[in-house]
Image (cartoon, rainbow, N blue to C red):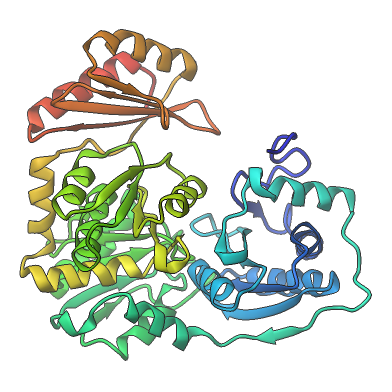
Amino acid sequence: MRSTPMGQYYPFFKAYDIRARVPDELDADMARRIGMAFVAELEAKTVVVGRDMRLSSPELAEALIDGLTTAGADVLDIGLAGTEEVYYGVFSQAADGGVMVTASHNPKDYNGLKFVREQAKPISADTGLADIERRVHAGEAQKADAPGARHTLDQRDDYIAFLLAQIKPENYKPLKIVVNPGNGCAGLVVDKLADKLAFEFVRMQFEPDGELPNGVPNPLLIENREATSKAVREAGADFGVAWDGDFDRCFFFDERGEFIEGYYIVGLIAQMLLKMNPGEAIVHDPRLIWNTLDQVEAAGGRAVESKSGHSFMKQVMRESDALYGGEMSAHHYFREFSYADNGHLPWLVLAQLISEAGKGLSTLVEERIAAFPASGEINRRVDDADAVMADMENHYADAAESIEHVDGLSMNFGDWRFNLRMSNTEPVIRLNVEARGDKQLLREKTDELLTRIGGTA
């Protein structure tokens, strides 16, 4: 465990990655130093490097690679890519680690770095990132006697073959799908898949463009959803998919253009994968659970709960050898993908489910919402988050059938439940409420909880 706080020396070192303004905080010199520290910390011999479409990414990637090779590591450069392609390169090439140059959905003047070690295992504050930061600050990394070599790795065709091997393309119907990378890099993979699949793709915001002409690539923002929603309706598409900039998250719209909460996507993917692989374990986070538990049990699987967050999910995935793991935040993890998150397998799996079920995505989702309506995540800014958490537990303890602290506070009352979590970085409470087939009860209890929590939206 780390003994010093993350970001002690450089505030742009976050718990799971680096996110910084360019060039004020992160510039070529810093990227070079981070590359050298990465090699020193991992004693890495081979490192996979990819970059997103941001205007600063080529320069930062060049400097990073210079640092990696100067410290003695060979670099496999996959060029313009997504984070999942770095993951794939690391485990398929048996590399010692990987670095993705990306700021995902941050504003245009930001960039950053995401790190993994062997087998695409995450590197976070507690598993090496704080030590990399310390090494950068101390200038510990040394120039190697023999520098490493840089090699171009053209792996996308192999990656496409890997994706197609995880599903059954022969079961697909000729669907029409709206695809919106938000001017990120997801379209690079979509184009390769299009050559192999009999889908009609309606492309929008498709070209990688670091100018971000359509705003930050973040489909969670309400204002960013309408373009995809409208395109689905106008095209008469079967569903729509939108990604963030480095496409490690994907978001769905049904054939009516309605945005689908990630919670219900988890259950649908679990259902489809268990149909092909019965009896396997499925990992889920504790915020909203009943729909997932119901679908996993109905499909003959075994549900395993994990604290939310990719490092926790991946650890529990490995410990339980789970087939799949999903978070309501639109991160989806797959055992065959070295237990890492992937932004393309989810829509490929859903396309198979829609094809085989003979139902529209709206129907599949509405059935689940009717059975287990949920509030979606509601944030409230409060003066004292710890005090609010303690008050909520004390107030509802006598009525609760069960109380858990896997991730924040979860309280189950039989016909409804809630999860309440504190933000790690700001005085914000995050509330999720769900009920069993009773939307009116859901609304009443959500209003009741929010009144007691207080604060501001």
